[in-house]
Length: 578
Image (cartoon, rainbow, N blue to C red):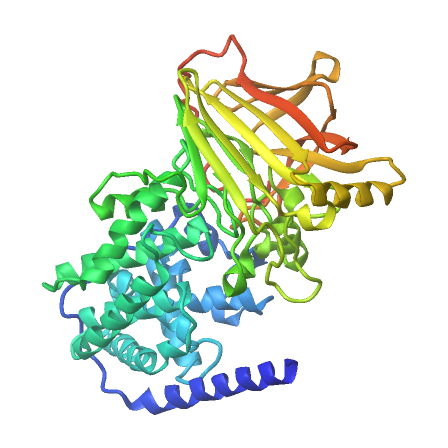
């Protein structure tokens, strides 16, 4: 199998080189049909770091002051891919000053000279689409003050890349990279003189993918909220660019935008960030709001779940719960064993979180971030609710049946859910109940491990015997955001948590478990290393056919109903290393 995969990859690389060589003589576009409207948004702080020679790509920091990007030794393949994708061009454009423009122009023209058609991995289809979008969005910034020879070189490269992408986009598997490639081709076709013939076939392919990959509820198979945001952003760019060019976007693209918008609104916390599940982060500041505003509608998904996530919200508090089985098959390559995990945000401040995706910190952190103990949920000792094999990256096993009920009372929003992820192993079903008060000041919960049939009781008895009747150990974890200051209180019977807004929350439990406050990590893209934080841990053992622990999170009585939270969140730290 390995040799077959290697041979297939080798054939793809050779085919990419061949087609890049074939399009090298493409006639150059003479300019833009109209001035491109920049739609991508960079970060000033990251742009200034690039100018200082601090290159932080894909979680790797390279310090290279006064060194051109293409003279830097690329430490990893993901670092190299980010360099060739040119998303950093948005950050330099965000700085906007003359020095940033000079560096951008120098690095773009150096890329053209150093990486001719067929050079790999620079000319892989997914990176070519990403690069086209950035070059077109930032063309005015890059070309400002450049002479005609350099401008002609820029237009020639854009033309060749567009023709190459037209030949090779279809080798990409359906999903985000292919969306990006098709949008890049549409962008170029609409913007460049002589490239309009690429728009119709790319639009048709994009329309087909929208119908195939985005279901009637506005969800994608990976169940990754940030990936869904990336897709929505690409589709809104297409609709806006087509309208600016005097064209009507195909109905399937417009319909997909309308399906996705309400889903993402349901997955947005009170602070405006996305819930962090299945490989996704909270999203860059402002990106979600911009994408949702472009949809032209403000509806939120009204179903019991949105893309398998349930939302409880009241007052200033939002709670988002993973209430569905994890993705399967190819869609599970970044999936997490997070069934019934939740996150809680109060106003502008996250309180309970999941550790997040660790892929940017290497394989070890990537695997750790996907395991059940890295989520705010119950976990049997040493056994995630779904498994990541020692070889491969596809999550397997896990819950087959996830049941959920919701109701509302005069005092609370109530959710009860259960999954069978461990039933086949030891007969135990996990049941989680959550009640968010109507004022949003308290979340009461219970976690139960129970058997539901005689067969499951027999399975449990066998598993209990294997422990010499010592009990099946389990923990319930509540990972805290790094900005939360936590301390044990009431002689170790409770945990007090102070948010940067000044709010005080208190965690309590019914005394049937051992309470501890332990180290944890917060895995966030764009940083050199994971951030240290804490987690509340309840430890117990299942000794009977039903074991239950009750707990609560509540604002301290002295915390006002409305907190004037005017402290600005820290901008991107110098290197985001804390």
